Image 1 (tube, rainbow, N blue to C red):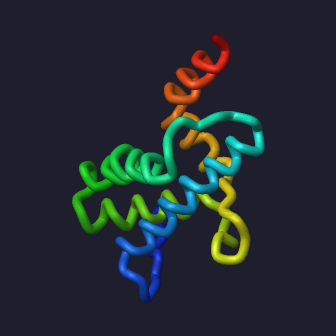
Image 2 (image 1 turned 30 degrees about the vertical axis):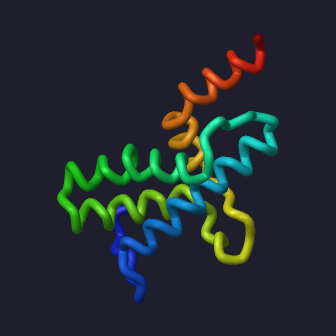
Length: 113
């Protein structure tokens, strides 16, 4: 995860692309499993930014923290995101489940009653 991510795109753009792919991949995975997610794509992206990305920025400062967050998000989606629908890696599944566990539990309680 600590390798430098060399690209002609600014880290903010790469992070936004990974954030969107991660959110969409999570929605796709939940849909395929028959799990209803009450959050929209935009809400998922905002939560990813506020919870995952900001963790690294707070700990390591804006520059290093954004690079680390970008790398982490990149590790959470399959590398073919530009040629195939976004899919999560096992790390992505684990992290997203942890991040949205309470929302999924609340949604399942609502649908059961």
